Length: 366
Image (cartoon, rainbow, N blue to C red; front, side, top):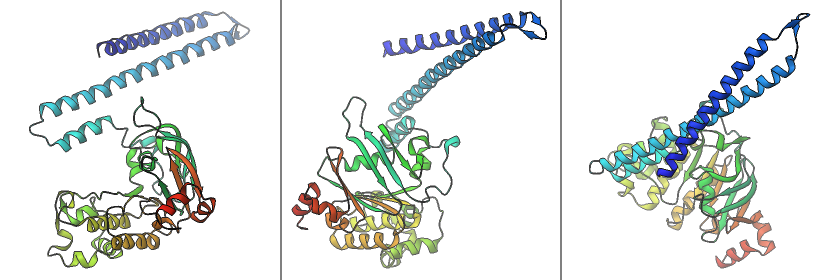
């Protein structure tokens, strides 16, 4: 830590001195230029003077940017340090969740970037492109996703399959920028997601996770945390998610109090609440991260039928636990050790008798 601190200090001082030296040299050169004699209304050596002055200005601007970058890095590190220190000092009065949230927020990328905010109606099509995309969890670790080159057209239903550890969930982490890309880029409707704020990205994509997330509070708050929709719209989403009868029978209906994590609801009911939340938002891109892996077959059928009818014009990416749920999808991505092994329609992949065929055979589908 001491060595790093000394290096940053010396680098900051060096860049600061470079900036001032370039500034002094520019001013001195400008004084020489103004002292040049004027002959026939013009000065001699104008081009030389202008070129050198421009080069000095560019070098000054570069040193200023590097100096500012170092200082901002220092400020960011100080914010993380103070957040961690306050968390340790207040460990008896703060919950572990709140401590983790504060530290993770201090480490996160900007929530919003005003100059790079996408249009309010983005994405309109839902086209997703992975261009030579790679992902690693830490800089000193190997890539978990390598050279992913896939284009998903708007409205396509795409299944993502692979053996355990193939990189299926890592693809979701990259799409939501939980982990930043190690190489390549992800383009959604001609916008590089790395260039926009996290809020602008995550607000436009809906996910139904394997473990349904509910918070302590009313059922309505869990469905519409920002009170953006009317009660009528909320009831409509519950009806489409096959939950209207259950909620109507509750004494408090939409004001029914959910326990932390939704413990007073069954796993299937919690998953249907997440589905109703997705129906309410109806974003152009929907991600299902093994959403039906922990539910019974009846709930699985309800979720799949709703997705097919209500998200017909949306791009749906499904990390599939049960292969039978994606056999009628437009295309399937087969991952193996972080690479795309096969990519095509389910029928074509079955005819190739490759990895997907062997997985379907193991599942008793062929």
